[in-house]
Amino acid sequence: MSKPVLVVIGTGWGGFTLTQKVDLTKYDVKVISPIRTIQYTPLLASAACGLFNFRLAEEPVRRKHRTEMDYYKASAEDIDFEKRIVRCKTDAPTAGEDPTTFEVRYDKICIAPGCDTQDFGTPGAKEHALFLKTTNDARLIQQRILQMLDKASLPTTSEQDQRDYLNIRIVGGGAIGIEAAAELWDLWFEDMRFLFPHLDGKVTITIHDVAPKILSTFDANLSEYATSSLQGKHVKIKTGSHIQSVEADAIFTKEDGRLPYGLLIWATGNKASSLVEKLPVKKPETGLPPTSLSPNFSWHLLLVNE
Image (cartoon, rainbow, N blue to C red; front, side, top):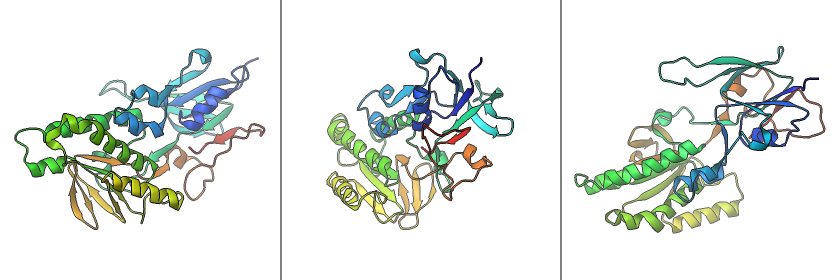
């Protein structure tokens, strides 16, 4: 007798945990995600700053002891709840080629695609800012750090241009943004300034947040401690800062106008994924699905908010 097919969409905290704990003797598990690993987001800032290897900030979905589970590197584009079919699309394997589309039938489904970055429609943010959601993002940040230091070290670079290139701006005073700021300062102060002594005193790290304080969703004592700690590292904190647009080398704020940067990290806001947005199910006002992982209830559809 064939086992019921359990489709898991997403390899984030919720989806990955389910794939590793579900009883494979009872379910035929099929995992659909464009990312073949779980990304340990709290470790990404440290990995970007070279504290440890990128491989330590992720874990593969495919495991030697769970080879019965199928993994499809693709995006779930749509779900037909009546026919119990997931419509999928792969990334184009080669430039100029069309992506592959296919369908996966299921008996039970877990929808855990995670969230997309919320740029609030800010012009230029997607094109010019770097994000911190995956190990690939962390690698790009690491590369950009080296690029801006090399550019600032050229003999043709004026002192003012050096200071402009060495401006690191982080949009978002939440946990990810604060962690990134602290790690970047430690990287410079404890390591890189000794390799680039001619640039010492010219690196600036600034956190921009629209809220009146950083870590505004956390306990007030934690917010005050983080503020004091960052100011002790000479990290600038601009609260009540409204980003109006982003260009390749500068952001424009309502309060201060044009502000140059060499590295811009966008670490603010999440929104529901495009898949969740189009699902014909009732969603809360935030647009994010509820979480329910009770092991005792009977289910056909499970939404997991990560």
